[in-house]
Length: 186
Image (tube, rainbow, N blue to C red; front, side):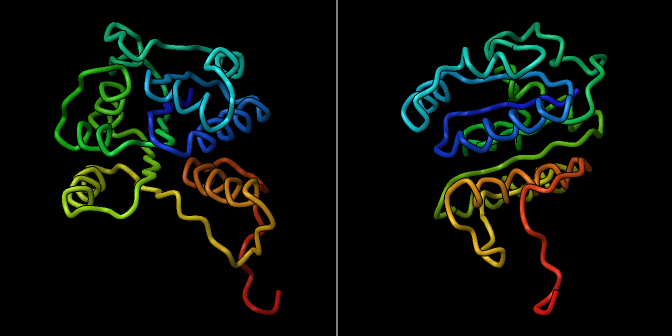
């Protein structure tokens, strides 16, 4: 199982697209959408979280600290938080497990599973960078929403697909969401 969490940063399209692709690949997913993310989903994409719930196998309320994903005995492989707010990243970096997102991330790190955070903030303060470094030292993967341009994206979908493709690469899931670099003379 892959846990997908969507927090209240701009760029919820990354989490939505990831969920769509994982669903299309037949991957078993669990979804957590924070309250601020629900507002951003409506503002940026014009969708409600109810639509996303249909793409996941399981949905967990973000305030439910009794959710199975909050225990190391729950067997899931990885977790992706896309987008990841600086508040969430900060909480994870100091072990402040106050909701289902930060507690599940805490479980992932303590159990040495794969945690991928997709921060969507710019510019970054020193404390943001320090928090990212702390998480990286514990094995978490920081995958900023920084699309490449070597594949000559034609629209927003191409840029989103690049980031989602990189997330899938980290999860070791084959994908063809973007044109890979093969040198200047492919």
